[in-house]
Image (tube, rainbow, N blue to C red):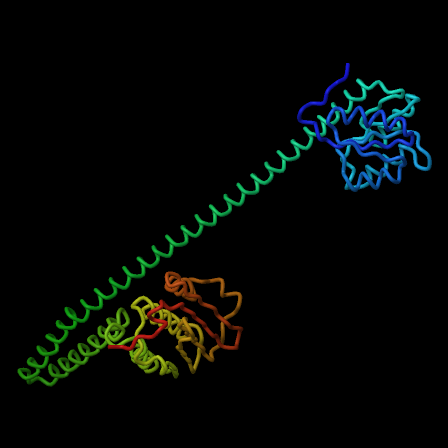
Length: 392
């Protein structure tokens, strides 16, 4: 009985290495009848070359060949990455236990004995080709599984990244709403200070002046004069507080004019010289969010200078470079200890960065002890702002 090859094994390539032509003819005829593709080699060197060239599915290897025996051929096959995975069936006439053990040690998978029993040869060929095919299928499945796992991991990474981006976008929207609410509340309080308290103080001042006309006592007049002076000072304080809460110039005539007023008042009160360089932007208007953020950052920075720097001169430079608004604030004070830069709250950095975050602005501080401090701010401008809009 001749064992037929499985349908899925037809076309499999078998390389036969044997130095006896008669053995080759018998094996070639039998294997080709079963639909296998057959290649032959009559010595070990030729067999190694053919194995590397055609990479057969199975090798039938004669154990006793001149120059290089089957054991050495098998060793070299298994030592090469290109051929190490090819199953090798030894062919031998001796069938000794020692040869079989050595054959398995060098990497063989099976034995057939001479003279050949073709049913046995075909059965063993079919078995090891089937095993070989299943190994390849398992390798392919493992490869697909690895690819699927990598794809799944990449998808999960992309999902996490998307979730992170979404969370950051939501955080920025929340910050933007918070800043807008704060500014609206500042605007409301400033309006109440200006309108209600301001009017009350004006009425009080007029009443004191009328009262002065009715009082003759010198001490009473002195007291009334002091009260009128105090009322005037309170009025100026209320006006300055309302301005700091929400300068009307920021809404009416723009950022640069509002800054000129602010730094002039700040320099007068603090005794620190302030140099403002923003002439190139005079008359330019930006979005309310951009103008407010720049103004508030400058306010916070100037407060820090007054509290911590001990500076005599502060320089502010505001400019536009391409599609970014650049702000540089430099002082000649005692600088900032690098170790204290981590205290974001103490230095007001957290508040500044929260102001800038919704606008995707950045803030960097260059400083060293005793060398002054430089604060650099960059704010990407919306398309209309970058193109330039003149104040109306």
